Length: 291
Ligand SMILES: NC(=O)c1ccc[n+]([C@@H]2O[C@H](COP(=O)([O-])OP(=O)(O)OC[C@H]3O[C@@H](n4cnc5c(N)ncnc54)[C@H](OP(=O)(O)O)[C@@H]3O)[C@@H](O)[C@H]2O)c1
Image 1: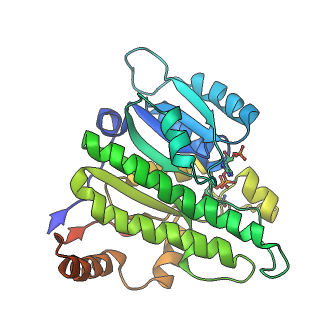
Image 2: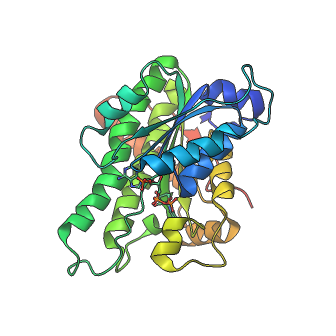
């Protein structure tokens, strides 16, 4: 059984996941927090989003950050690219924006649709846009960056999912279904990409205090700090497939999915490996995080 539980910190983190990270949906909310934590850890960052002015403002904030560890060349380099992640040519656009950069970490953050409500009363475009953003984007860009990371022999992929992915729900039926795509995709890639030296983690966030969350729900005093969510997710790289930030959220995930995920993932991977004549080796890891 191969043990894939590893922790990366300081120079080890930068050597494995640097020198460049790309954050899709990096101009506000949890994506902005990923950029902030990565810049503090001394990684150069490319931020992707639609609004040029929001990107420019966030890039200026990140450029002012003093990395925690002294870094050759001083402060980190920050680039931005205006990209709509729902478009079918997103991988080509992002490839152009990151040509020549040694990318060691890709974070797909954007995913909230701002389209909760009655499935039948809202137009179909609301739901197809949600699927394009939360399924098409991560699929296309995980494939693109997965190949680049495989070529360099090390790196990380982070997908942002949600506690909503744990099951269906009225009024967020499409959001929950799209997020379950991310959870299941990330879980499978955690297994499949490990031999290529790629650590994959999917974060199942609960309520987190972002602009989108406040606009969608009016906010909550129990919402988590986006920086805590981003830092916890990055710290979980190499330790298991699914990370759930927050003790109460982890209790909810364990109650919803009482069957441990990693043994189930090994069992399914072994069955499929046999059917397709592909290699299988059981893996170990941490379930959701430690309390
Ligand atoms: N906040 C929560 O309570 C919560 C809870 C569970 C899970 N999550 C998950 O965590 C992730 C981040 O959530 P969040 O609350 O920070 O807000 P979000 O609205 O998912 O992300 C905002 C970021 O994504 C960009 N973005 C949105 N649509 C885009 C598009 N079509 N193309 C390119 N960029 C786009 C935004 O910039 P532009 O608008 O300028 O493009 C901004 O940078 C999501 O995947 C969400 O499902 C959040």
